[in-house]
Amino acid sequence: MSAIALRGVAKRYGDVAALRGIDLEIERGEVFGFLGPNGAGKSTTINVLLHYAHPSAGTVEVLGRDVTADPVAVRQRVGILPEGFAPFETMTGRQHLEYAIEANGADDDPDALLERVGLEGVGDRLASDYSKGMAQRLALAMALVGEPDLLILDEPSTGLDPHGVRRMREIVAAERDRGAAVFFSSHILEQVEAVADRVGILRAGELVAVDTIDGLRAAADADAELTVELAYDPGAVAPALDDLEGVSSVVARDGNLVVACARDAKLTVLDEIRAAGGTIRDFTTGEASLEDLFVSYTGGSR
Ligand SMILES: Nc1ncnc2c1ncn2[C@@H]1O[C@H](COP(=O)(O)OP(=O)(O)OP(=O)(O)O)[C@@H](O)[C@H]1O
Image (cartoon, rainbow, N blue to C red):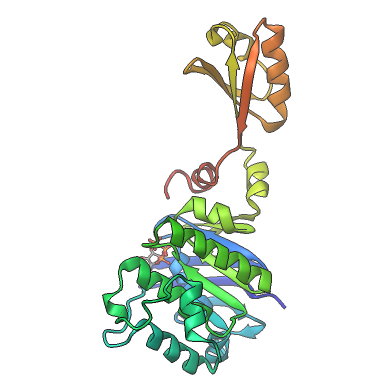
């Protein structure tokens, strides 16, 4: 049974086609990073998954159930970290967790949850007085109540300091290893790159790519970047590379030669530099980042 199975899912708001026929399957034990520019339809997808919005077409199965038929039972097994979580005015952090535990019929220890997200020692303070990052940690703790089979995290790192970001990543990995599926929507590409087993890129209501990051690199035929440190003037050997197959650009930068080329052309480039009389002191290679891939799949907008 898949954690999420969307088939032909469309959602219209009046004249706006927010989703235009999404097919997507996410398994348990998988972290899925969900990306897309502003207005691409990410929140709409999450709303449809939780049946806060009714799809105009298609079927939405979450944890093996049709969410339109049984939204309450589905939400019971899903841990949700909503975007822009705002604590209740009159409740402490611990009371928020006690409330979530009771509502879920779970038996978690609130103090263990507070400690897990780094809020030990502040559970008795009013959560409305928490800083943004503390409130976000509390929201994550609430999402973890009851060992959910699916976690839906909408911009989970909002407001978190670097310790909090690292802790959140560790929690996501631990939840995945426990067998939960994690659906992780974010604009912060480095964080998605660090935690996601696969990513989906949404553009104007359509999924334009679903793959591992390596798979996206291969499919986009993204260039590798080779930076070569030479003993002498790097500009002198540059012309020898200009017409080499697989090379898309050659520039001398900071005394190095920087070559953008197909991934399987890197060794040929190094051979050609030597053949042209260059003495290579050192070289480094870099791959297309998720940001490069995102830009190439979404036409430059984020
Ligand atoms: N309740 C609504 N009524 C009308 N239009 C809506 C509604 N919700 C979303 N839309 C429209 O649907 C499209 C997708 O919006 P959505 O909020 O899903 O995008 P998003 O990918 O989450 O964007 P962002 O990254 O900016 O949060 C947009 O054109 C938006 O204006």
